[in-house]
Every structure is written in C-alpha cells, then in structure tokens.
Image (tube, rainbow over all chains, first blue to last red):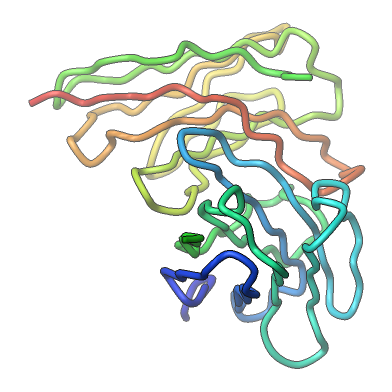
Length: 116
Length: 112
C-alpha cells in the first residue's frame, strides 16, 4: 500500500543537461499533478495529467519543460537544457478522481533538483 | 488572485490547542475549504476539508462560519511534530481545473 513514489529524491545536473523526474501514483490513482516549489517560495501548480492525456498544462513554462503519463509506467516530468533557475523541489500528487473532492490529493516526498 | 488570507506565522505551546484562522470572503457556493500542511522539506499533507458544516477527523477539526467567509483549523493538542506551514485552500466541488492554488500559508511553530 505504498504512497506516491517519486524518484530520485535528489538530482544534481549541470547547466545544459536534461533532468527526468519520475512519479508513480498510488495504486488505483489515474490522475497525476506536478507542482514546483522554488527556494523560499510556495507551491506552484505545473501540470495535470491522466493516463496518456495532458488535461491542464497552464502552469508549465513554455519552453524546455514537458510531462507525460503513459499507459504503463510512471509519470515523467522532463526538463531539457536545465538552468540554475530550475533548481527547486518538484512534487507530484495523485488522486483517483478529477479533483480533490473526496479526501484531497496524496503528495509524494518530492525530487530536489539542483543545477550546478 | 489569492482567494484566502492567513497570518504569516503563529506560535503555540506544546499540548495546547492550535487555532489557525483563514479568511475566504469571496468563496463561492460550490467551493470547499481544504487544509494541507507541509513539514519542512516534505511533501504537502492533506489534513481536512469541509463545505458548510464543521468537520472533525483524527488529525484536526475544521470550524466554518455560517456565512462561510472564514474558517479555523484546530489542532486540539499540538505536538512538536505539528510544526509546519499550514495552507488553507478553497477549491470548487466540481473542478474546473483540478489544481490546488497554494498561498503563503501560516508557519506554525509549536514550542516545548
């Protein structure tokens, strides 16, 4: 009965490299949400996905960022050509429903990305 | 476009009740009030939610005023492990975007 699993917990990338962050939702959850938390700032919504579909990506930066949630396997948040400003904690949440109506989202422990 | 207003910080003595206020004067009829908390360096944790009536679970109680313009989260016997940032969020019952909009929250510090 594992919760939302994110890996890696910590990721260090040099400027210009690619970062891949993985999120495995709770069993039975088909809705995934990605949030970013910059240092000393609040959580900001990035993207909401269902299996094989992006439902709402209004919080995603226009360039270099992409997300997917394939039929099989975890959801992936991909950041190409990372820059120092991408350094942040990235959290994934899942729910069995479209919205947080019943009992709220379940969040993972996050991936801390550091760009050097 | 903040929908909620919370104090920046609060202190509470260990073992005492912690009462965290939240103003949401523009709340719509179909919007729920949700509370989450984030302990340092961890992912946010759902606490409780409600629409009109007061709610209680194993973690906390939620008191919503009759006009629904404000609410209070009550941790009945705060412990040191309750030190965290507490977020009050309003969100529609039937979601239009499925996102949660986190504000600045209240930093609750529980002191020994």
